[in-house]
Length: 487
Image (cartoon, rainbow, N blue to C red; front, side):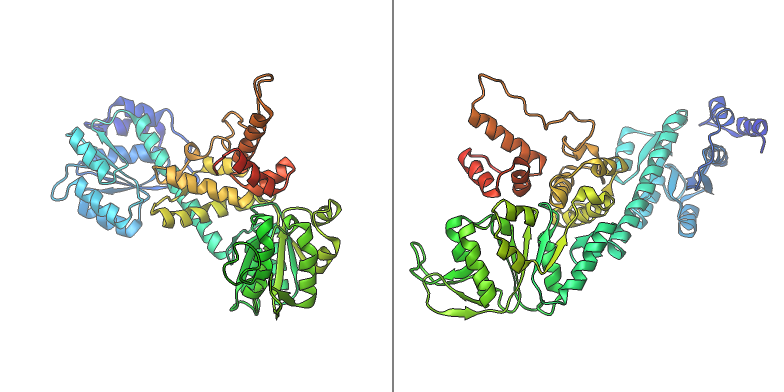
């Protein structure tokens, strides 16, 4: 249909809602058609209204369906599944509000706009409560607002489709046990785990804090012949030096002050299964030769005891340091390193596999929806871009914390930039610079503030904060206690 014919046709047909303004909007500034037409169902008992909107919506690139009443609308919905519905409120037999309730019962996510010539505030409130996207009154003259509402609805429809594809990718391509990742570095890690799981050898797992080293150990255990036996995890950095020997080897009653009972060590607890020693480079040096001896002999003696217990344990250890560098720095005994280093797996940082960030984020949204009883659908495109740009010093653990915070804070169906921490939003001022007043700031105040800022930057990841500050993680714990800093 030629432009002048279309304008003349619209002028002659439009009643009530439209005037030459509509002709101007559709006859002079026709936008380009979209690559994929969205289906819009227009419901009204006024034929002129249907014809007018048919012209207008087609000029905006929509595929238009028409229904003269709610019954016909339901039939068209069942047959064609329109993306968006625009409906009059006052219609014979079945009102637009009743139609809205039926449509929302069948598909709560389908956008529905209501239009009426006899609108009231109470009716608008009721329409929004029932799930209408917006409520417009006749005559509709603000075509810019109508177009903006339809554009917003289209964006949400596309975002929802992306989210569904993302969830499908997580389930079909991005899952490996508890791991989520489809990037090349993670596929290589998955292959290594599968290769070593069936071989009963010790493994060293390296990688920055928060990359999932314990998940590697658990995956190896789950895929091994020991899967039905215990998996015992011990974090060498989180146990005080005075207690770690008892934790590893066990103790008899009366072996030391406070030993009021007998306690088996982690080797006995893990008998037949897998023992995971996390942060092995943080283990006190006096304990490392004793550990080496136990590993070599396959027998362990509890503190204060005389009897040696034989054990059958597969050992997996992890460190966020470069093991060879830890050996050079005197943090890890060379002979212990070579005893453990039969097979090694290096985990990439999250910034090295940024394409996995949306997959991980969507998985965490699902996890925290279940935990907090929320119904967040996913993450907006803008928020996803911010998450992908952020370097993630705390890796997957930090991302998980950020998503949980966003799920708790968001009041809509989608996580957007507003609920992301300020330090992640690129437009926010940087909070990573430490400014001190010389002459009024004490050394203790400066150290305290530096620790707090570093923990904020790492998402409260103490091991990563220790790495960035060049100290061991036990120093961080001691400083937190000394300065009375809560996590």
